[in-house]
Structure formats: C-alpha cells, structure tokens
Image (cartoon, rainbow, N blue to C red; front, side, top):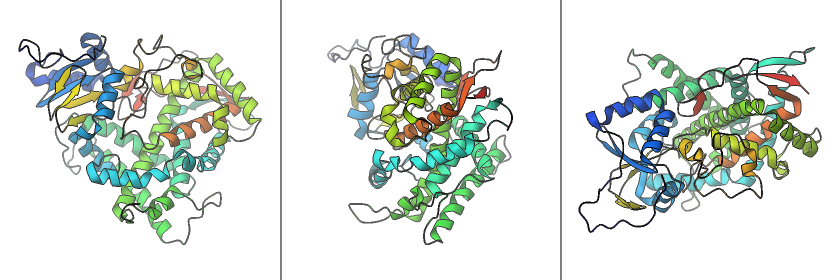
Length: 470
C-alpha cells in the first residue's frame, strides 16, 4: 500500500486512467449502502483492499479515495485553489449554519475568514480561558452528592453540559440555563440527521410527515431561538455584562468586526450564521473529544495517574489558565492521542475538483470528488507504531516525528478548522480540572464503546464511568 510519487508515463495507452477500486456494479449503489451501514469499517476495508488511492463510482459521481498523508496534503494544500466543498454536504450543513465560514466558497469565504481570524488567534483565544475554567468549576462541583465519595456518571451528559456552559459564556457572556440541556440534545439531533441526509441526493422538505422530520424541526427551532435571543439581548444593551463582569464576548467581537480591506462589518445574517456555527461546532466537537478522552483515561490508569501528577505539580490546586499549557506536556499528549484514535471529524467533507489536477502519478479530471478519511490515516502502522494502542508519548518532545498530514483532526490547508486553538485550550483546561478533583474508572463489566459516525464520531452506547473524589 505504499504511495509512489514518481510520475506515470502517459505515452502508453495501455496504462489505466484510474487506480483500482471496488466494484461499481449497479452504479455503486451497494457501496453507498455499505458506507451508510458502517462508514468506518467500509473505509478500513477500502484501504486494505485497494491501497492509498482508489477510484469508485457512487451513482453519477466519480470519487477518488485518498488514504496517504502526502496525497491528503497535496490535495488540500497544493491544489486548494482548485477544490470546492462537495455541494451535497454544503446543502445539508447550510440548513443549520446558513452562509457561514464553514460552507461558503470563493470571495465570500475569503472575506469571512479574513474578518474572523482575529477572533480565533491563540492570543485572543487565551482571553477566553477564564470563561472555560468558570464553566468547569460550575459543573464539576456538584457531580458527587454530599457525603459520598464516588458516583456513577454518564459522561456524555457531563461533557455536553460543560461544553455548553463554555460556549454560552464565551459567545454570549451567559451561564448555562434551563434550556441548555435541550440545546445540547438539539445539537446531537442535527448531527445525526445531517449524516443520514448526506446519503440522499436531496433533502425533502422538513414539513413532510416523515421519520425524523419532527425532531429535526424542533432541534432547528430550539437552536435558532436560543441564538437569536442572545443576539437581540446584546443589541439592546449598552454592553454585555457577563457572569465574570467581562464585556469581551465572541458575539461582541463579531458585531464589531470590520473587513480590513473594505471597512464593512458582517451583515446581521452573517453574524447570526457565524453564531450558529460557533455555537454548534464549538460545543459538539469539544464535548465529543473529551468524552473519548475520559474513556481512555479510565482504560489506562497509569496514563491518568501520570497526567494527574503533572496537573497537581503545575497547578498546586489553582485553576488552570492558558499560561499553564506549555507546562502540561503529558496531559496535552493524552488529548492529542485521543484526537488521533477518535478524531471527532473522522471524515473530512468531500471536495470537488474545479480544474484538472495531478495527485502523485494520477491525473484527476475536473468535476471529480476527493474523499479523505482521517480515521484511516490516523490508524496506519506506517505512521504510528501499534496504531490501535493508546500511546500519548507519540506526542512528547523527542518522540519520532509524525509525517505531515498523518495527524489532521482539524483538517489542513487554507480551510483548516478556524477554531482549533479554542478547542485545544478548552479541552486542556477542562481535562486538568476534572483530574484535579476525581479519579476515573470503568464500571465492572462495562462494554467497550463502539465508535459510529454521525457528523462527529460518537459512541454507539453511552459511556458511563465511576468518578471518585481525590
């Protein structure tokens, strides 16, 4: 399965124009059924059977599967100007996110990205650390009833609640309220619905009395009303007064942004759409990653003890801040290894070529699809020794270097996730605060969770752990 980068001679007509791939009988529709049934298993089989690059027909589409770091970077970095996001994926996400930076293309995307970058630089994100630690304190203080030393906790609900509190504080300057649980459930409903809709050629109107439509309508209503309510409250106040007395929220910054080239602000609709994508992506991605991290900490007590010792030595009982991150290399390594084993976005949104491009030895025509699956690349033994094992030391200083493109939980290239610094800071602060307070163990006889694809990578069954006061 070795990727060969040497150019292929085009002088011989006998050479194939596409690499080998799975059977495309019935226009590839059986492949779509396999993908829908178990996406990750399908991608693993595809890689084992056909190597680093393969070709297949999916209905009317011609798709190239890129399973090598060099190919992923060559596509997403070198040829970024000749790629757009797969239209069907954009249609599905646009229903929830509108014309946000997640789905726009061309000049509109460049303008939005240029304007939003100042809100997500490492320096700016560090200013949100107090919001994050306040949310952690608020949620962790009452996990175990008074007078008890341990409790069985549904970790999905815990991390959803904490991440929801974080994004509400950062985005709107408000603490989690009674509708936060409903909003978290709505986010997961839309994630599951969006994944299913991507396997259909079009989205039927949501008003139809079809399975799942009522839940989707309700989820959209909950999130839109929540976001609009906070925007209206901000606009009608002279300043946003937050739980900590601060006024510098992400919403406030979005409202004050101006295009450095034209001086124009974001439109009212753009502000709403960016709030929607920040709210949903900022909550679900972090909560999902921390859920898998908790599972791995409970499964690997020696790694957890190492992380706790590091946290204790560095923090000495104080709350973590952004300045502490460089002093927590082992904890950071456990989180990065979690993102390798269980990347929340395990399949990057498919791209379409807008011009012919060359990838390795293959000439790819205009209009074809490129599919990249971090789940497969992250678990390749060529880049990671014992790839299915949890080994945080891979990410410590002095460890063998990881090839560029072999670890891409946030994507790569111009469309790398704009919120990656926010997510890593949030995960590190909240993980440190949990370890300060509790030991994590698995209940006896608890099954190993099976990862399944929604839009994010979720466990098929809830992850339940025993938390014990330290």
